[in-house]
Image (cartoon, rainbow, N blue to C red):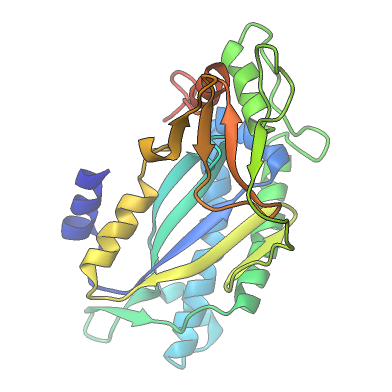
Length: 282
């Protein structure tokens, strides 16, 4: 994590503003996308194409150029695919670091970066609608329409059993098989409000509220470490007197849940479900 972040900051990402775009996927799509790296990459490509197109048009408008000149601009992204949620459930989603603008060449052929104005929440709402529509159309062309949400299960594949249960937030094995983890609530539930520059459409959630200034390389390195972090820190685990494990959530849920109480078997099941299938993480 630390080595990759240092390499990105020192050797890859230029001194331009960088915005983090986080795309979370619908519940019913997570299992098949977690098991099919080709489908996961395809969904990512569809989403980035929508975001890049928006960047190109914004850059052309910033320079006073007509919309047809947007194709003269180029964008780039560094994406980390995370497979876990704060509760260690199987939750493949994307963290993309995208320069907050686009590149073009001037009349002398020199490369020029054109920074754009920050996206508004209305912009994010429009983008997530287009991303959801594009991704669902693409998945339908791959044979995964509304009525074909899951890949054909292998009855001898034990990990798929664990992954299906993890994606649903349930235990797969043991006395609590099929049941959700016991929740530890610390306050009354509340209506969950989306933060600024965040929107949801048909289960696709797009958030673009984090931006790093051009010369703030320390903040950029922290962000690079964050998107490459492991699924769990030891400080979030606490062994209970009865032998169970308390898993503290990074942020309490809207119903007040601040931690989950898991048996050792349940914790192990969740960790195993996060491992990509053999030879399918390419």
